[in-house]
Length: 331
Image (cartoon, rainbow, N blue to C red):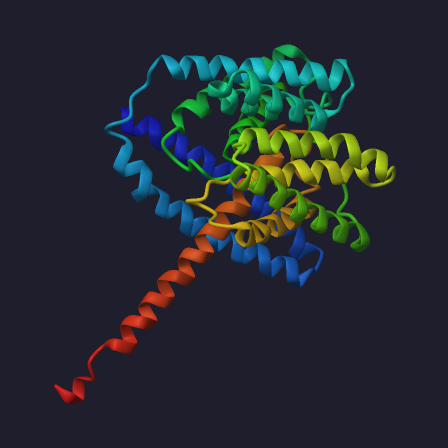
């Protein structure tokens, strides 16, 4: 029974990530954008490879020894609390989703660091559009679903930036479907805007990673700082495009939350941020308004980079073995 529960947590994260990335790939193909189609295809291959590897690394090796405890209940409640607070700040105080989530992340890291991760996960739920989740009851339901997924997925994909967002995305999508609300949709931006989004993503992602690891502030604080700054500065500095750039910045900051054992340095993170930007652009028409969508984009990008790098590492090992293999004709 316990193995089935841990497996369900794994499957949920895999399915949500692949659905979103497949939608982005479809949009790129439909627009006849060869470069993005190629990048997202390679990314999906990397995602599938890394996700398959995760089964043996963590799912199979840890499912017998990992138990539920009182901390799981605290994490569950924290996600609901984080969701409600963020939604209140975003909708009632009209701070906007990016500033609200960034503020909750920073305060959680400062005041209750042990619960920083679940509170920030809840913040992603609370980023949901009022058009999709229009009441606190809906936010609480989404938070509760996310809380369950958080608990049952605790042994897999740890250290991959964006995991918490994917958990939140699950809660928001399921709640949106249950309430019969329509997801929002937006057009793919023009080339000029695409360039701005990509640059913003790389800068924000690398900054988050550096604040987390180089300065030692940890992933929640790092992402919260970058999100808060982006939400306050970019809309004011760029009235026409700043809102979208702020959303991209906090999205990339989720990728920047990756652990060093998953993403070893800023160069790999910059590549993940590039993939995040492309996925962000080409999933614009799909599943908009769901909190956690940005995190799911980041999650896929980090997994893709890890997966593709592992594929190349294995190919290099195989080539090395071939080079040192004895010549059968000499035996």
